[in-house]
Image 1 (tube, one colour):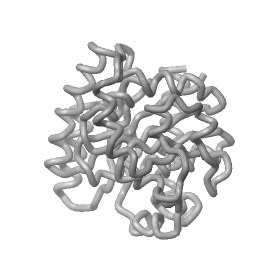
Image 2: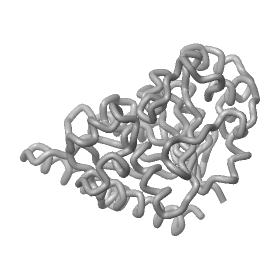
Image 3: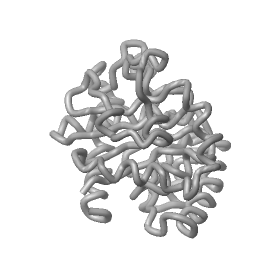
Image 4: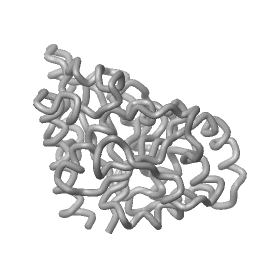
Length: 255
């Protein structure tokens, strides 16, 4: 059974794309076949894997609007076992056209129904709550919400919870969610906010937190995930631990 996981937060700059790539790369180290889907018109996930959006022939836009099969859109990356459906400039038009399609919320779910060759699909969502994110959450078994231990990021969790309730009522009643703490610093404020988030959400928060690491900022320059660029770094070890938590949760609660 293929598990579909959306990684989304209305607030930008919370390491959403970095986490999508790092978790995917950590999962393939255990022998899994993983598909990444770049749903963000900025195409940062595509760029982070060293692929220029302007040079690709087919993108996730073809999957959503052109009924193009997954195998015609996905492509191998430099990481064995890790495939990507890239984004391109066409994504700027996709959201506008999605709204006029009948049952538009279900387009991605239908497209990913033929992704059974992968053990997990990770969806990198745009920092907005529009049609693309709604499609992602409708298609997903699980939503991961990356959040910094900062006021505005923690505050945005309220909007995400409202969206989860709406999605459960409208199009995906079994959607689950987990909160992931990212970009954790050593300040007193960060520690206090982490304690508040863990107190408020309990076991819905991953035990592993991702700390600040300059190596993560260098990864996009070389087009590699942290597990390949700096495999012994603190960030690589933390993302491996988080990926293991995710895998365990999937097998216990979803599979």
